Every structure is written in structure tokens, then in C-alpha cells.
Length: 170
Image 1 (tube, rainbow, N blue to C red):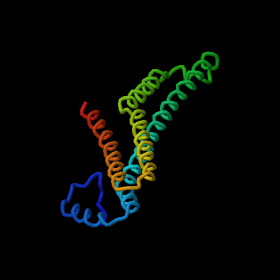
Image 2 (tube, rainbow, N blue to C red; image 1 turned 135 degrees about the vertical axis):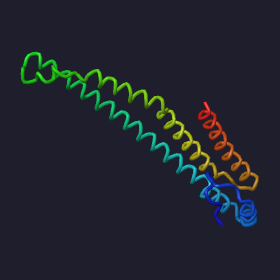
Image 3 (cartoon, one colour; image 1 turned 180 degrees about the vertical axis):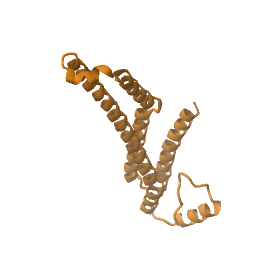
């Protein structure tokens, strides 16, 4: 009996009671594996996916910025050549350099406003922290250890979720 999607599901109390009645007969290793599979691995995959998403966004912002910067530099060089060579006079007549610089500033401002770098780092931190907690499962031997480990994992997840909720409310 799988618990469903932990991070989006509303609690169905009858399923929860049924799940508890099944899990109570699991061995310690089965409990650890079950909790890891249906709670922690799902969360870890989510954090890795979001970190990758923000890493890709940052890469796109940098690429666009470098593209506009490169066009600006090439245009400026062609404009200087146009001073001495009539074949490059077209670059003297049009001057999009100010527009290019504005685009660069716009992309940089957009990236900063979306906190992409901060969010990438936060998801990286969450993934690393959760990976460490998953590795700590090897130290779980008794029921009391298991309870403590689950509490530590849930406290870690709840603390981070509360921190993000507060940031979103600002």
C-alpha cells in the first residue's frame, strides 16, 4: 500500500490507518526502505530537478547577456572601422549600442529579481542535506533510532519549507 504523493496529497485518514497497520509488521530495514522510497527519495528527486531548472535558467541568462555583449563589441569595432573605411559606413549610420546595453541590463535585472542564483543554491543545499540524512539511515538499528531519524528528516524538510513560505510572503 503506497502512501501516494506525499508532497501534494491531502491526508486520507482511512488510508493512513491502513498503512500504519501494515507497516507495524515491517522489519526495521523494511521501514527504513519504505520511508526512503516513498518520502525521502521523492523529495530528493524534486530538489535535484529544481536545482537543475535554476542552473539552466542561469545559463540562459548568461548566454543571452554574452550574446548582447558580443554584438555590442562587434558593432563598436565595425563602427570604428567605418570611420576609415566607407564599406563599413552602415555601422556609422545605425547605433544600437545603447539598446544592446539596455538589453544586457534588463536580462541582468530579471535574473536578479527572480533570485535564480539563490534558489539554485537553496535547492542544492536541500539536496545535500537530504542526501546526508538518507546516508544516516545506516546508523538506525532500533525502533527508537528510527523514530529519531524520521523526526530529524521531517524537521529538516519542514524547516526548509517554512523558510521558503516566509520568503514567498514578502
